[in-house]
Length: 246
Image (cartoon, rainbow, N blue to C red; front, side):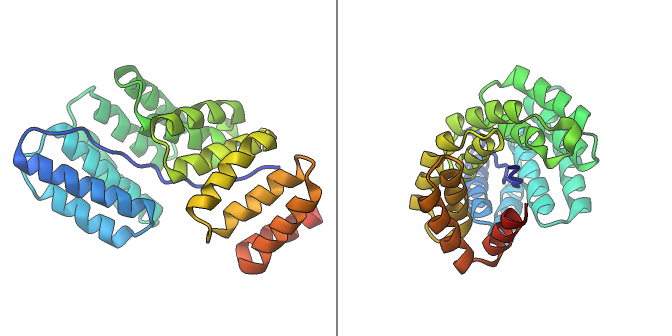
């Protein structure tokens, strides 16, 4: 079974010395929280307010610009996403972490996946414990950018690292999905259960838990769970119908 997902890639920035930069960091972090909730309009406003604080360190400016690029990518405004990704690596100090990170995002947006991977790896050489790198590599290897780069074992390694660094809901979902993609259904179960405890109204979590039960030998529980989700969510109903016709 192949599970495709699209995971929000977010970035929290390091602390800054001047007051304007400190205020900008707070606004950025608030924007990140709104992006987690898919409240993109509010997030965009906060990111622009952060940039308007002025006299920001290159690292902070580049990080906020990257968040704006991601936001426009999520909302299907590719030209704007390209603009902010390019501006992000131009604002960053050359050959710095944010230079390579923003350049990687730009390469993904232009479908140059190999160059994106190379830039993520360069960024990793500078900062080896940044969630954004592993999260993005996890997305690439999970199949979001074509079969040529799909490698579920690599996806699991990167998603595990991303979740270890920042145990947030979208990253936990990505990790659970990675386990499903390599048919380690039992390992995914506690993750889906935890996700449901955090967000019980998201029927896709219930559905995926049901699938994990089904493929772990818990057919009765699994059947009830997928039907529960399908009865409450049209997309889950569609996924169930597709399963039944395979």
